[in-house]
Length: 491
Length: 139
Image (cartoon, rainbow over all chains, first blue to last red; front, side, top):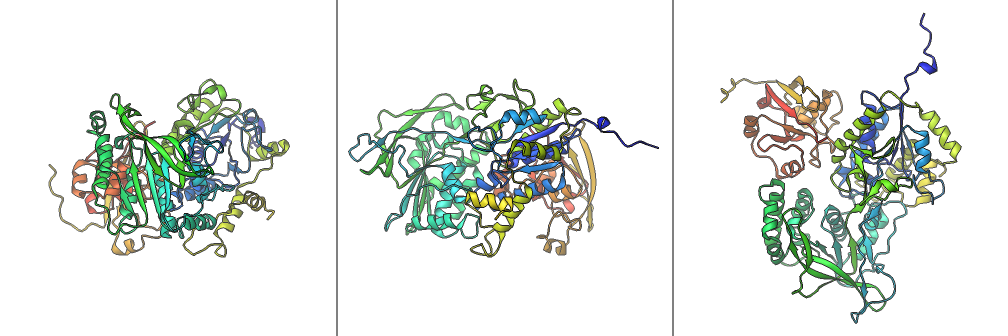
């Protein structure tokens, strides 16, 4: 007769903590759990009681098809009982109460993987000039300058996001300048345009945000997306650009000044594009946009792509409210593939009037406490996802690669990190399971929420009585305390 | 060049997936039903339902547990279902939509004249006896 397997004879599997619960976290969890040497448990830790990271907070509300990736993550969660979610647990910041220091995680878990994304914004310090052209003391930047993180958080209903928006300009379109030429700039522009067109109703943008944006956009929206370098160096995706182009007829004017396009096409830029099919196709579309005749009669809204303009100052009125952004025209120089821009000494500054400025310069990661010395030049140093010089610390997603790519990009990235983890830890470890993790968290006094808490939130958000129309996927809970109470089951 | 296949009405096709993400590459021969108009009319039902007749290469791979990712669920919002077709079949299938080309621009290991998104290649008689390569991912 076979004796039952004694505890000390059970295979010693490694336990894994993942910081974050967005796409990279789920793809990493899935890769590990399906590997030939899976962990005993995978615990996802998120500061928010609601999982899914940028799928929920970052992907634009009118891109529900992309947001549907959350269904895959729910399926992954359901398929693996060893996978757990702990919400309301910010990691690494010793300043906020209930926060879990990285050191505690590393002591308890065999493997800690960061899938925590990029928590900081690239900054743009500029002087504020008053009506007379002299520096103006007071708020710098002016209140009407938002980071893309703030605006995106607002229209995506990230709990606690409530930036100050400019007042509705009476009787004329809202003018917005978006600084930065990537997909986030296109998202912000498109959402503002749709706010005027009344096309946000069937999205999951929360009603408060939809109303506020519709109110300030009532007279139309004129957006200028401004790039520092040339047309050849923009970071827009062709799909995102084509989407805006195809939706423009009858709704808004979409333009790219031909003169700036021609100035962008220096020899080095042409060399960068030639023979690279994705670039050739993107540039062909940009040229088509540039040569399209302006619609008549001119619609109330417009989106223009401006290039070779570097921000030099915020222009404010006497009270310090934003009234424009000053740019200096640029010239490109340097070898193809690494051209730099510099102020054109012969050109006068270009002032673009605006009520709202959005800084969309890209995101960067900030080091967790305890890993500062591994974070250089804005990134952790790593080898195939393993943080160099640290035992048992790994990376997946934006925190590993920088803020680039689409949702699917994280799949191969996570597979690489999973391979590194399995190589280092396959077949060895402390073997903590979910029960041990809960006990440990309880012992530390961490007030976590769990997947059941998220399911409660999900049910509340999808309640038809809450929604403004049937097509709206969900009416998000935007109040932080309410979100926590629902997740705790205390609401 | 290949001789023209005999003209006959097929109801199923033999399709092989060749997964180059494993070493050595692994071959998965399958039989797939060619969707009828009735099957196409039910296209909106859950493709994960075992009774669903796969309409394209991605759905076929998923139903047979083959490792072909479809992060966006076939909505032309990613390039994870990237497959390489035999050159002559690629040509026979003809031009693809702009939107598919846009996403293929992001695909790793893209081969002009062979790359398609699996979610856009419909199961029909032309696929009979052919092999579809799942190219190695970048890591």
